[in-house]
Image (tube, rainbow, N blue to C red; front, side):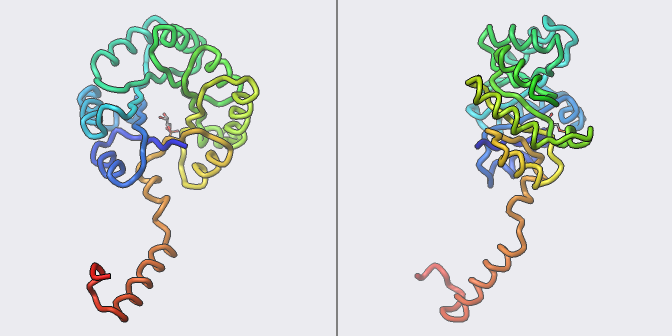
Length: 223
Ligand code: E4P
């Protein structure tokens, strides 16, 4: 299982990367626009924080496959290190996934709401697919079920494509996606911090410290 940071907030990325076992950072146009500065500057700073090996995902915006291919090449030429392109699964997107993949450019197929979209994206050469769990739930649909169906389809047809589930609004949605078999999840930093912010764990740690200090004093290095 892989955990990605779904954010372009460099301070939050630095903090999460310091504490959590993350594989990389995913962005989308909304996330980059929210930073209020040139997006290439933001992406370069993210690269300097997470290092050259970790993955950064950048979404293309073109309406036509050829435009998406050009955007992908430009981003790859501009941002150093391990960069993957996010391509929405429309008709033009499917074509762009095929074109980018055939040039050796790794693609995450995004804005996925159904198993069929995911299957077609994988057949076109996508390395990852991103079902939008919370947005599916809001249709209303069942995001966990869609993740589970995609995992089953990929196993059934041996697609060699990973499910990177996205669009989460709470910890339970993330956990449900993992239980459904997602190979990876991308999560907002504010939700990642909630994974271990468990009051009972804090109470247990405090209780252990108090008992130790009552018996041995404040110095817990002299074991
Ligand atoms: C992944 O990068 C997706 O773009 C993102 O998780 C979408 O999340 P949202 O539904 O909260 O916008």
